[in-house]
Length: 478
Image 1 (cartoon, rainbow, N blue to C red):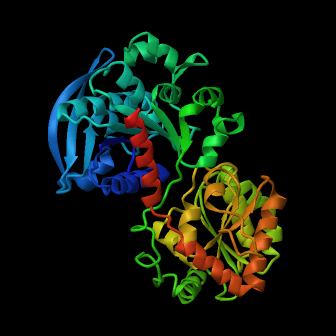
Image 2: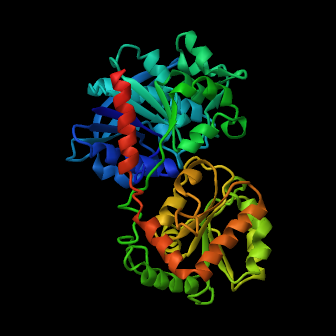
Image 3: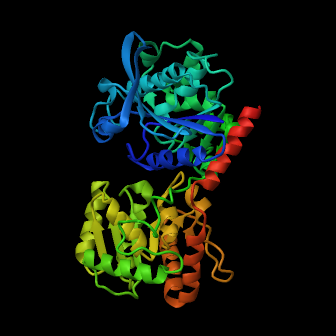
């Protein structure tokens, strides 16, 4: 099967969030399937040019129409001997030669250009995919373009649009249709929403399938609370909506091989390995080196929808317990100030690290006993999966991918993966923490059994890639 994958970021080339991780691991997993050929398209941002210039080769240069504009397209290819997985980059200094990937006033134009440039590049390459999978609003115009400007160009091509975060939808003013897109008039109906244009709406309506990153999130998106205004559109297209939970790249995230850890370990040596990493982190963070105290960790953006409001509400009564908590991340000023003030009150129990540090993140996954993730909403979430893979027990709100990946632990049957709460409030969150700490303190044998069970889970991309292949095969057979 020939598969084209298009995204606005992909590690290791460029990453701002979970999409970058997905676009590193999923193409690899799909390319490992016999008889598959995968091409990935990414923008050639300045950072990509600076870091990978010696690994890129020019394939072609041409121009495309973008409304009244003629815009340059440089098609670059990553030098590789791998035939089954190819990476291509769309180069244009005006649109992508900037510091950062997003957050510019002309983002709508930038990614409209990118979508047209990708499809034009596929034509130039003579690449006729069976399935084209695109991701989030930045590539949401592609299914519409396949049915309009590029209609008939790619034969029986099927399009799949994946929603990683419905909050960001690609809104532009209505004039954008005439000034930039210049598509047939019927396309306006697909794009128009509330007097403006919405890229994601168009993708939902014109893609052959719409997926998102967990089964529960796919169900939640049908309700106004989660859908950010698109619930009606998603309800009308629910027949083609499904959820496939993300995996993690176990070559990157593995306690056996992670070079950032103070000592590596596996499921057989997890007790000794975590004890050493815990002691080192306690010293590094200025906390007493007490092996018996339950250490909690949070690696997160300090934002309300990540549940930081619940943590701040609970912080004093949590610190009254015999626990330690290490927080890593940056975000809203009010949360940074509240947590920093709490650290000043509880210097022997709380370490707040207002920074972005990948090495420290890995060390915390390995050192902590408990991982807190009380998100108000979470399409999939990777942190709770990484934590379990490193033998750290998650405490999560039962929403989105958190519900799908962390089954509630039953101390009687010893089934489940972590501790959960169902109602988004501070008391329920605190109750879940108390249940988790009680198991750690009172039933160490069951605690170790839970760690072993979580570490043995297959959290790689093998299972999700298999589900994507099932979806692709069903599409092609239609």
